[in-house]
Amino acid sequence: MADRVRLRDRYVAELIQLAKSQHPEASVEVVPVPFEDEDAHILVYVPDSTSEADMDKLGEALTERSVEILQDTGLLILVGVYEASSRRPS
Image 1 (cartoon, rainbow, N blue to C red):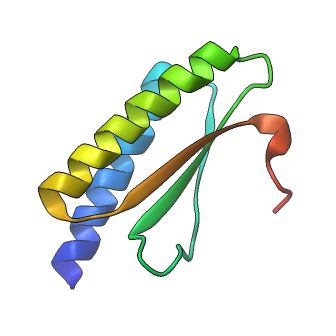
Image 2 (image 1 turned 180 degrees about the horizontal axis):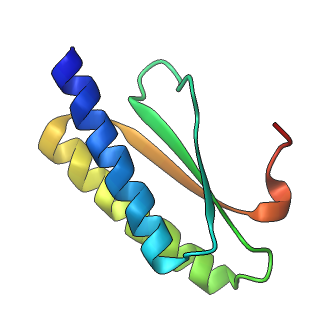
């Protein structure tokens, strides 16, 4: 179990780094308690001024990598890309 947690943490960090490499100004939140069959759920918030095309491009890159991780490791890490104004207050 500890190995799976370390593996999950490694891939969560990788996906966050991928998001930040494409949108350095993005903020990222890892949902503390993911849904039943998820290993992790990452929410990426980009500035409201980000074009829909850029949001789609980022979402596609993150989804592609997430699917590769699932196929390689069995880890289900979901990632969503949203405008910053849609972020719920903590």
